Length: 334
Image 1: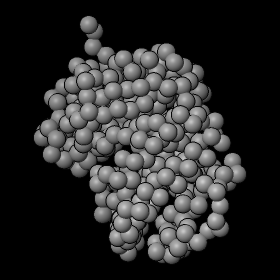
Image 2: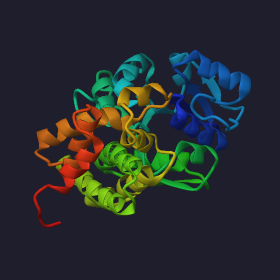
Image 3: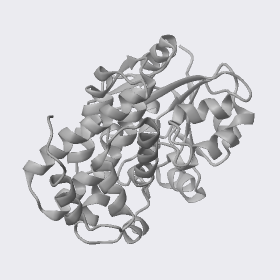
Image 4: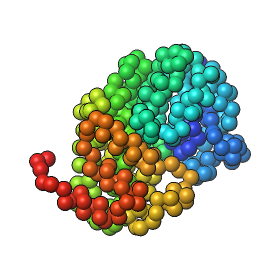
């Protein structure tokens, strides 16, 4: 069987974990890193120490900082960049992409100014040359656990069922199970907005408020995600599945969640800029909060938790006071 060439664009923790998984399937994997020191470190030490420390990477993974080299002849271009650089990176990729390639997004976020989902950004950029085959991978999946081969289930969504089916077949293994869907909006809204709710979950933890408010937050957070998702054309079953509820539960309760960790520190009284300056990793929920609120306003959707998270991030309200605002809202039916 001929090897499949996969270009993984983005060597953060999630991109590196997916490269490790795909290399384990005997695919030819090229991992593009923005930072030269990351690529050099993988070559010399066999490890991505800034983003995925302590995990020995397979020798077949080929790191590179040359984006043309990374995608040359690839069947799949798997993009795992932060959402705020998605457009600029796809513009760099555009001259090197071919119509037969399948573009797979594993980024969970919204573009801040346009409020577009990542797949919409991809279509807006790549559509200048050709109509791309696009799939989206989302669901409850911490990078270290995927890299270590822990059992994980996610969703691959594409408007074209054949595209989703190909990705499912070529990316699935005994440790990573992919379910297919045609609900791209649901997969992306669920994956993006759960990061905002996870910041709120971390704040509850940082304030030491216990389990009752955490359960209420996850439940009402899902209600917010579902309202926005439905307004964007998502299906209810997607938002109650892996890409919605599943990802939300993991990100709100797991200690490996970067967004939850930001919330914990906010709840303990640290300022946002200080928190962000102390980590290599990107907490997507920080930028997604404003985009989600703007999208909600455009769709006339109420998102009270997201609004309070936004006020906290802008240092316009203290975390404890934000909890009081939510608890003091007018009483209503569930």
